[in-house]
Length: 250
Image (cartoon, rainbow, N blue to C red; front, top):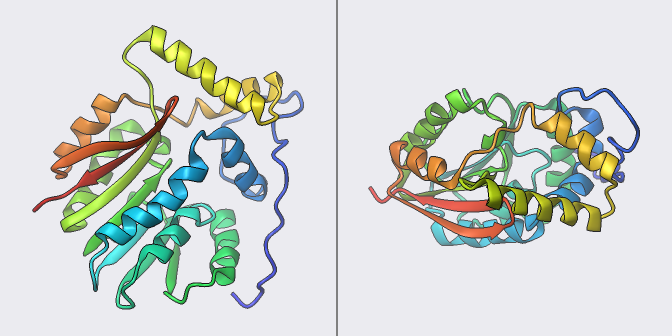
């Protein structure tokens, strides 16, 4: 981490020209434009990140572990880092993309907090979890195959200390087709307002819908409770994007 030059950040133009609708992958091309992509694509992302710091500060326990699963470039990791007041805590970011982890190392090195951060290039489905007080899945679970989501959340629940929490941010779908259509249209207008063309919106949607499988809030609540969390509340929503706080009481 000795090279403290920020990694190059580019404007997201990945879908600006006609292309075959390949599956969306978190490869080097996505890593280079990821900050711009997520800011212009996910309503409320710039609010959710600083609030993760607030939530972490409220729920972190001394001597515990904190995890950012699917950390990408480390935005949530660094928010958690600044919310942890205890020097004996362990902060771990996990992502299976080497390109993301490599760039995340630069951002961690440039950050002005002295709590060590451990980065793992691993599959979150099998990474070791224990003694957790705060865990984040920030727009990550939606990329996990639906049949594997309960097992992952159960592992997180089992690793979470009494009083610990999971922050789960997701794109959701709605029970009502009419509401789904309205919320999707509003999301697309948000992207147009941020400079994406109709071609970019259409092509990215075709690519990402093969790997991003959204579910309803009811599905998420039920699964989180089955995974061992006692309370599940929505603390943020903008259009079809939400962030939930799942609390384990005992």
